[in-house]
Image (cartoon, rainbow, N blue to C red; front, side, top):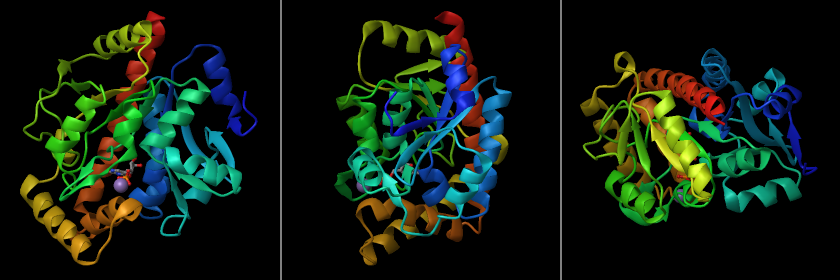
Length: 304
Ligand code: PSU
Ligand code: MN
């Protein structure tokens, strides 16, 4: 293995024995949720992956080393970096954090790259990045990475802080199929639907695993996107969320918040504007996506 890559022994053993493993990202910990909710949620998500029958492998860069699978102490260390200037690592940023021996939180894009290098095929998170509303050139590196790295990402779609129709178009251009897990519509993170269609609806882990397997057999090098709606009981009232999101995006424009700072700023502001109500949905969907990804990972090891 590469010497910058430190694979936690339990994760390495699971991989060597062809047991199911699910990667988890770290930007959601440092930039997506406040401390200490972020650490609690990360732990809950790891537990949900185990309950679904797979080994969780949270990925982050700590002092220039890529860790695949974190200890509780390392999770706590990362959690306390929330609100600091810790580097948010997509493809562009990975060599900067490693070479400069920095800490780095991996985004969906960054986590896909490092999961693939470690030999992990499934990755669960909350929401992917997309095309920003009113900023058609601010396209998340997540969308391009999904077009070039063969990892299956399980998420609840994207928040409507983004331009969802444009996001869908960019995914299509990059050859990324959207699989609706138990849904005909692309989920919109806090809300179970967006009005936009998925490319295929599948209702069981086995059905998704067959697509992942077929994709692997073809040797295609893009990623796959599996979208899972937030559990019904925890979904937010769409109107309440929309009001918060509209206000947050308007404020961001007025204050000139853009680039990599845009997504974290908007995420924090939406939690404030919904009085934390959106946090409950966020935690619920993260756990549910971890569990779902684990069941798919397990079905996949049954096929190969
Ligand atoms: N969307 C969320 N929560 C998150 C993110 C997105 O609902 O935590 C994070 C993910 O790590 C994602 C990143 O990969 O933000 C996208 O950032 P950008 O738009 O700058 O590419
Ligand atoms: Mn961006």
